[in-house]
Picture 1 (cartoon, rainbow, N blue to C red):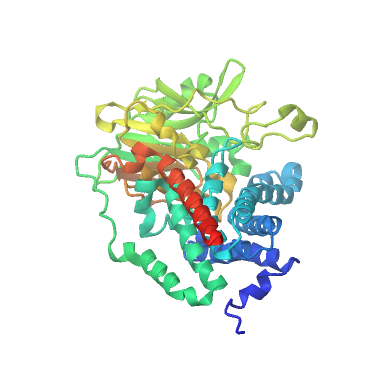
Picture 2 (cartoon, rainbow, N blue to C red; picture 1 turned 90 degrees about the horizontal axis):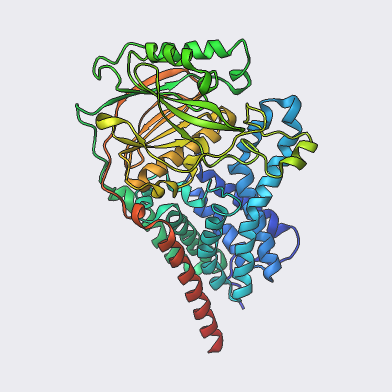
Length: 512
């Protein structure tokens, strides 16, 4: 009898090391869809191989191991920038870098392992397992973005951010994009399991190119009366940023950029935005620095990242300084970076000599009260502030009583190195814009500072690793998106229905 199952079947069947090794390689290949590579088709292709290997596993344990290996390869490549913070002070923290990458990738891969185990435990037929793995992986990734404070970074659906499919985020959010990518991967996995299924794969490929042929309508453009905002990018490398002899250098550089002559086509800025932790002194001791800042700004208000101490807690804050140098309002970052801005199990970590990497102040930071808006007056409207890591979470903006007019993201991406981390962080800011139909203005210490319209398109940006200032008219918002009103629950409910439907169909087939 002729074997029609395809060459991959011979590699998938054995229970030795070959199948997990292939899954790890395929997972790493899937990671090439993320920034800065942006080879988006690599993600469904790599996931198709992982899906087929999981589906062809001999038992749930084998499926779980293969899914884990695929996830490990995916996260090790996609999130390799996680070692960068440990290399800022190599003498103190460098030894942790390889352990951090391995443990981090392995920890995140456990969510994929759970999806693989459930698919094999519920279903026997390889094609049914492959079909179910798509919604199960979507649910696993949703869990990864939520539990243990959540880490919604590098979802498979994020591979679509730099494609015309970004519009889908305004309908379904990132989980809908992940469900699309994993569903296409499942269809392509059918061709590995059953080569004669290629017409289905060809049809799904045609589906993927549809937005290129029929793109979504562009976002509205700013008119000539829109307010002008200047974004400041001081470019202070992290290993120099807080060195005593360099603090005044970067402070002067930022003020020079703030005082730069206005663009003749735009006029003087109505607002100036500095990155995270830019103020060189504590906010409560910054009277003189704020006067210097307001003089450089020519009387325009300034949003500037700062640090302050409230009681016994340090805060990572965004301060609004008015035209006279007075403090108009303050927003405190509420979602802090574990192991960066605070230490889980702090007592144990301190005994091991481990400190929070990004915490300049002793003891790390304390969280603010929660999401809030910044009222910037009738010209600039109401902004939703996000400090660094907060921009990776899609749901916080829904906590506001009233919809803002735009979002502002201040960050210090010097921690993320110069290769993949800053570009992935920028991509997530683009996703936030497209999800809500709101523009995002982004000021990043070393880059990438950018102007993002309400469709998530980058209108202008400063180069990574260069100091500069960027003047722009504030892009207008679009009407609220469907996702802005519904959030993630509809897609997650759909994923559950798909899992249940596939399981019922498989049982019905076995019964007949």
